[in-house]
Length: 100
Figure (cartoon, rainbow, N blue to C red):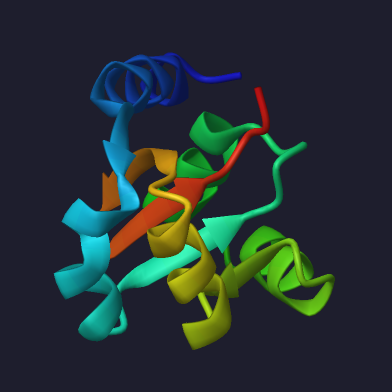
């Protein structure tokens, strides 16, 4: 593991935050929100995206473990006033719902 990746991982980890879904709706409407499966490591997925690791990203997309949030999912999250873990990897906002 390179020290550059360590620094990136630390930076991304420090930028993660919990946000109410209602505050992310404008980004969802712009098509810039991607959700990741609850069992994945949000920081690791963000590192792959920041490094433009196309093979890993394609594997996650193909497996449905990284995906665009559907209108139905967005509505359900809004109705339940969910808090999601988030991190920005421009132009994307990655979100993850982890059941507590």
